[in-house]
Length: 288
Image 1 (cartoon, rainbow, N blue to C red):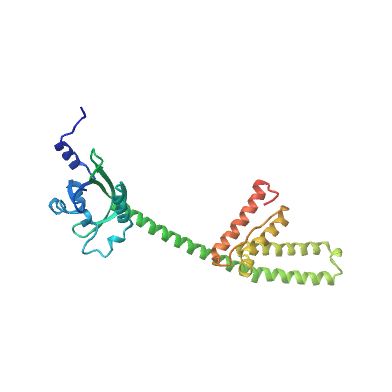
Image 2: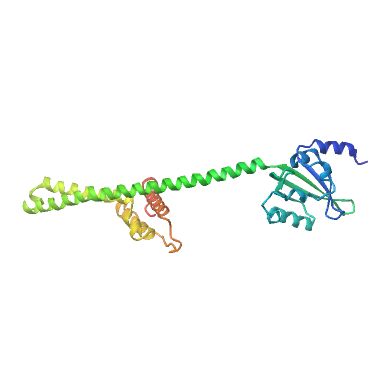
């Protein structure tokens, strides 16, 4: 003989469940509620006599609410499940009796009798308002962090460009002037071969000029501003190939629209440079 649980025991059990539970009669027009437990009443703020005999859509709208409940995707999901007589689970925006909004995780399940006829729907609800609000605050903080990070990158790029300009205008120009004057001095003294020390100084100045240009390109590569990212990457590949003696192939075909933001282009450039150098230094790469 199948084990049977007395109806009173079932009612007491459902009344003690901490989640809200409601049962709707699918055989009656508009599927009115025929049972709600105490947790459901505490969640919604309604009295039992205000819910029994009415459709649970009373929770979906409120006189003080500006939002149109019919626009909720969750309600569309519920309507589709009801039409197909299938279970569903959604996060639903509801309103308590006092007009305050809350979110609940609703599991809706159809109940069939022994003849396969749909008789009831049982809904199990859990208040997830705190979780939704926490998630919303977290998303807000993430947006703020992204904005701060973007501002930091923008500030760093501006500082790099300033430093590159100062190096060019001060150190670079001074070194170039030194090279010109040394060249004239070598010419006046009869050539560098007659003065090995002077020739050594000329090489040091020339090396300093090259290192200064390299530093300027690290800080703010001018080709990025003049010709764009693809050309700057191809130039970078050529420079590193000459410096490290490895084969470098650059595929940097990019669409003209939409244009890549300057801070992103500079980040890509520096990342590509770092990757190519690491490939040579740490992987002993012969081709990149």
